[in-house]
Length: 312
Length: 312
Ligand SMILES: NC(=O)c1ccc[n+]([C@@H]2O[C@H](COP(=O)([O-])OP(=O)(O)OC[C@H]3O[C@@H](n4cnc5c(N)ncnc54)[C@H](O)[C@@H]3O)[C@@H](O)[C@H]2O)c1
Ligand SMILES: NC(=O)c1ccc[n+]([C@@H]2O[C@H](COP(=O)([O-])OP(=O)(O)OC[C@H]3O[C@@H](n4cnc5c(N)ncnc54)[C@H](O)[C@@H]3O)[C@@H](O)[C@H]2O)c1
Ligand SMILES: O=c1ccn([C@@H]2O[C@H](COP(=O)(O)OP(=O)(O)O)[C@@H](O)[C@H]2O)c(=O)[nH]1
Ligand SMILES: O=c1ccn([C@@H]2O[C@H](COP(=O)(O)OP(=O)(O)O)[C@@H](O)[C@H]2O)c(=O)[nH]1
Ligand SMILES: O=c1ccn([C@@H]2O[C@H](COP(=O)(O)OP(=O)(O)O)[C@@H](O)[C@H]2O)c(=O)[nH]1
Ligand SMILES: O=c1ccn([C@@H]2O[C@H](COP(=O)(O)OP(=O)(O)O)[C@@H](O)[C@H]2O)c(=O)[nH]1
Image (cartoon, rainbow over all chains, first blue to last red; front, side, top):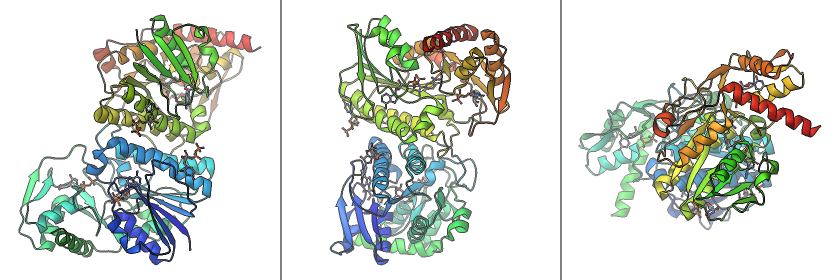
């Protein structure tokens, strides 16, 4: 039984992680400023003796006593991180320094939720962990991409210089219940559009690809990584690659909708492919995703249906 | 006549910039924590009514009133920035945020001293400003390379979001009097070795190239850029490319030394070529370097001779 801090624990991924760690019997502290997260995602734990929720911004120092830190606090979707690029940069730089300073002081292990975006618009496929990436340092996505890159750099600086134990998960696109319905990402857009009988909006040709993992696979991967001895970055994603057009058709089919598919202009700096090489996670952690895409999508569609009913 | 702040103004480049701005009649405030800089570099101005020297670390907030900020504070050579990677990261992230916050509050224009290292180990030659770079985010140089990349990202975030006027100079290797004698960089190493009759140490094959600009060319470039209307990044360097072996032979000849040339193992992540494309600076700023290499080297050798005498 460990004392575990989850920053960004009221968000999509963080709240599922809190569920798992609580079920495993740990003491869980969630720190969140509720920028994109919400109390509702963790409200079923409020009042539980092992659970604490702190309304706090990681850009400010935090003094608590813990054994492990899952550092997830950061806006994650393009509309959210571009909404206030300065804040995104402060969260990923000062926020990460604060959590590393905390880890150093209390001797905790820190896992950084990094991202496949550190590879930018990759020129090799699939992406292996030793690929240096192809990132525009001054483009519209840079506040997130460069923020996460330097957050990784900070982790290894604290590891080498101060002996802080770090883990770096490079997370690839993830979906599931509690994902943001209105953040403009592809899965949520398509599900919403299909459920509401609107056209499914495909940006660009639709031939760009993504690989989506279901959130329970990701959460298992994060916990396995945290409790293993691999300190170098590890891709955590589902290597099954689909074009955006395929997603549109699949989701429309699962929802049973008659929406048509609308072709819109390409997004700026939009990566054309993204696909994890997960051999490292398989070999060194014994982890790989197990939830079939359709099963995950069905659970997510259910969640969206209920949310729409709740809102109405 | 302007009120001008130079962070890192007691360093090599900053002190020459202070000289020029003082000669031009401005009010100059130098802020420095004397990590690699020293009072001696600016002591000829101490007591002048237009000059102020503040012992301050840019990682802490700074409240002064100025019109322009040349933000140079950062360790610059590999041994210096690798000495304390965490501090290098804090200086480039928190330090840059502080100076941008200052610029925002007082409406000052900020010029960031960025670096050719944002291109990393480049895969295209020469490097143009629209090249995204080839940087290892977790390598030994990352604290500097990624720190400067995200510092650039921060500048454009403050520009777009807060209307701060920014200038970004991507500075290529520079040499001249007041450069650090013992920082292990190639020009200083070779001059010292030649003057002291020791072997000139060439790392790797010696066929890797660099392009060196003389410090007065750089300082003129920075001032022209600051007072122009180009807000996107501009390379400031000398495109004349030489192999490291050529430098060894040239410096040995100019010193008139009989040192031999010693081949040592290659440095980790050592860029194999670096060469600025300066067409943008030429066309948009009317700037280009004018000091011939031998002339600059002779002035630098003179400086090193006097420093060695002074120390003895
Ligand atoms: N979901 C994905 O597909 C994906 C992919 C790659 C990486 N990631 C990373 O995983 C992490 C979680 O992402 P998510 O999808 O759950 O996003 P999310 O937006 O649902 O969760 C992020 C949480 O962090 C909180 N937060 C943001 N800034 C904060 C600050 N300054 N202080 C305290 N809390 C703050 C938000 O309120 C939110 O609860 C992020 O770091 C993200 O970069 C997610
Ligand atoms: N010299 C080059 O070839 C070169 C090339 C590319 C970029 N640059 C950039 O130009 C700038 C100046 O470089 P330089 O060659 O004069 O190096 P330098 O080491 O002589 O000067 C840097 C100055 O910044 C000061 N400083 C460092 N951290 C500080 C902090 N936290 N607070 C306040 N002051 C701090 C140092 O004490 C020093 O006086 C740096 O930003 C460097 O990255 C230099
Ligand atoms: O328990 C702690 C310890 C440190 N910090 C923050 O972490 C940062 C980085 O820590 P570090 O020890 O590197 O910084 P230092 O205190 O040496 O500047 C500090 O600025 C603190 O704000 C924190 O939030 N909680
Ligand atoms: O309504 C949408 C939303 C997204 N996309 C595309 O789907 C892909 C994934 O976009 P998302 O924003 O979900 O994530 P990211 O680009 O960060 O992988 C990109 O190619 C988008 O251009 C799309 O075609 N329609
Ligand atoms: O005159 C100033 C104004 C701001 N800052 C610093 O600059 C940072 C970034 O400024 P910004 O206005 O973005 O930050 P905010 O105060 O909104 O957090 C702040 O944290 C301050 O520490 C400073 O050093 N001098
Ligand atoms: O005594 C030395 C110092 C440096 N170098 C080489 O000279 C080049 C420039 O190195 P420096 O550290 O001066 O600058 P940077 O690598 O940042 O351009 C690199 O290829 C180094 O490996 C060398 O051969 N001998």
